[in-house]
Amino acid sequence: MLRSIVFITALTACIPCLASWSVETDRSTPDKHGLFEIREEARRFIAQENAKGHERWDVLEPNAKVLVPRCAVPLQTRWAPKSLGRSKPSVMVICATAVPNAVMERWDVPVPVERKSGSP
Image (tube, rainbow, N blue to C red; front, side, top):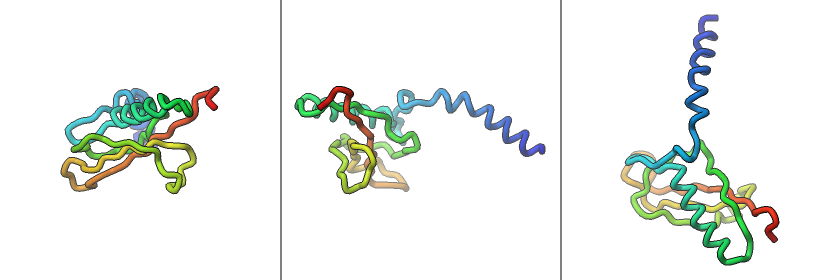
């Protein structure tokens, strides 16, 4: 019983922290690359694609569970290959060289996109 009360109290205390988190506040630090910057890179790519005039796309939110080390080189972007089996079209944001860390040397984060309404 006491364990349940402690768990519920701890969970209730965490709710304001979780509610205040968003991609807007997830910025890069010296150790990690923020989802805000990753999404912004996807937005730049989609702005260039939309300027070509073929189709109109909107960038959605990257997966909030993603945690990647800071990138040591400029980020790259491209369309995510269909062979990855993603359910929605996505832009792949790629880091070819992460800052030295014990977890990964490079990474890529898919950012989902959707066609703007009224787009061909």
